[in-house]
Length: 330
Image 1 (cartoon, rainbow, N blue to C red):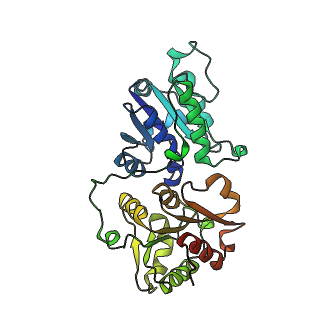
Image 2: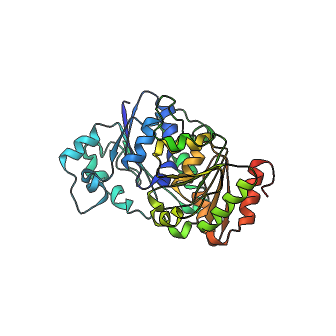
Image 3: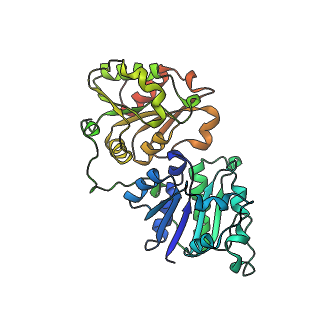
């Protein structure tokens, strides 16, 4: 085997729940090229970390026929897929992937008849792993278990989940921004945003936590990215506690490096929270109860949840942080 094409669409959190599966493939097939179809800037983080060898943008219309049963698969795409020994995809049930699954006869017509194709397969050389919410597993663990079963069927050796969830960062890549380098390695990192406002704890409560941590002698950084543009105007007029900085839209690799060095991380149900977990940070994550079972981060993470994120109290968050810091935060 020489190369595998991976499909994982969506945002940063969507990608990182598949990281254990990608790391497992890297371990099982160390000399095989792994190419990802996904969001380019997020995929580049995994490429720089050595998880994958290359990334293709999911926005490229060349891939569209795989997800639209009304469009024929052109010969050029068939030939492109034929360059790979395996084509693997990880999907949620409600993403329209039934179109992807129905392309099996178009994508690999020459292989049909050699063996009976799986209903979750593009053909004998391809497989789509579809999350089952009734499994009671997180998305990431479900993907990993199904991937492990698949590669075991190919005769490849597996590895424990605990060894496959971390994201290893390259020590050779230079720092991207001065602001994140100025944050002390033992600092607390807070990310108050998420892709959906409904997942967000009120910003004033994050600020109250910052003040309590500052009173306890803790410094840190409040990090915002593209998804937090709506709250940036309000943050500009707020004086931050002494020892705290606002890091506005740091580069993804630089953010990962900061999360890896920080003492503690606090955030909502977001891609950055999954990144913090993958980087090995001590994580306190704030979730809506209905999303906790499927999307809880792995690693050294504790999840606080309620029917709505806003129902989680400052006192409960400070108590969780105190347990992670091994002493009370006043």
